[in-house]
Structure formats: structure tokens, C-alpha cells
Image (cartoon, rainbow, N blue to C red; front, side, top):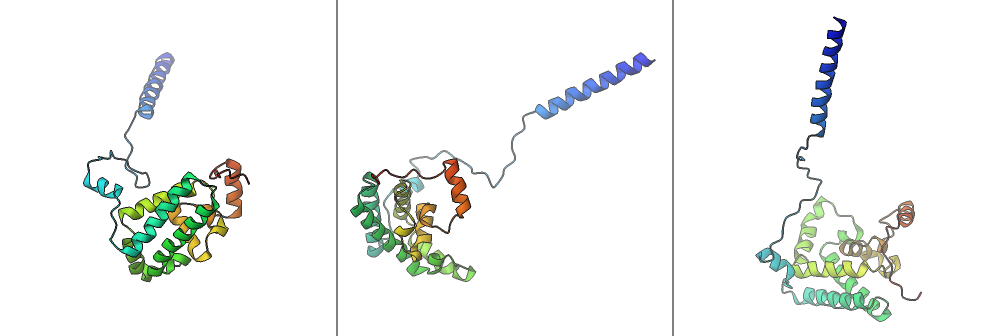
Length: 198
């Protein structure tokens, strides 16, 4: 009787281990999570993709001039990041471009936008939301990735928006705490600075 009970217990444990292991090792599809990015194949013939890659603007001569200056100096500075004259002209063009944004929605410069400011922010985003403006941001990000700008390069009223548009936290000293910057430097997670012989 004791042997039969032992064989029964071993059989039950074996079945529980077998089916439990099978359940644990079973591959199940992930449930959708809104925090994870989704990817899709881009069709280059899609009209939306063609529009985004074009230089279409809103046909405002003042904004077009500002966009063109930033694009031209960004391209030149990307090719020659150590040229101080190009850097000066680029900084001036970016300041003019950012101040045009701020002239529509002043809270963008101080990062004090509230719910009551949303019509102005929407108006600024619409005015500077053309495909050409997307190219301006891409060009700014490419130049700022060279690591040639610091907090002193841009005035305080523009530094927040420049940092946002160029995706460059190094121009906004308030964006990161000193401790965060220290740890980031230890991990080697900083933009590679252009070697200009300094």
C-alpha cells in the first residue's frame, strides 16, 4: 500500500511539473502597450511621405527667409563645425527663428505655458508646422549632435526652445541636474564634441 501511494504521489508530481513547465515555457503574444512605439513600413510613394520630405512651406515670406537661413547655415556648419564665423551666423539665424516662435506664443520662451495659452501654442505650432519646418528641426538636430554648442551660445529667452527644437540638452543648463550630468558623463552618454583644436 505504501508503494502504491508513493507511485501515485510521484505520478501526480511528475504530471504537475510537466504541465506547469509547459505552461511557463509556452510562447504567448504580447498584449498591446501604449508606452511602446509601433513601427510600420513606410511607402515612399505615399503622398504624405512625399509631402513631409518636400520643401513645402506656408508661403509666408518672413518665415520662409528664417527657415532658409537656418537650413543654409546648419548645412554649412555641419560640414565645417569649427568655423567660428559660420557658428556665429547659425546662432543668429536660430535665435531669429526661435524668437519668431516666441512672438506668437511668449510662454514658449519661459516654459510657463498653461491651459489658457494653448490657443497661442497651437497657432505657433501651426505657423511653424510645415514640412520645411520639420527639415529645419532635422538640420538643427544634426548640427547640435556635433557637440559644438554650450549654454552661453544662446540668450536665456531662447535657450529652452532651442534645446527642444534641436534635441540638445547641453544648451539648456537647467534641463539636467548637476548630478545627472556627472553620471551621464561617467557612463559616456554625452554628445561627441567636435575637435576644433581647443
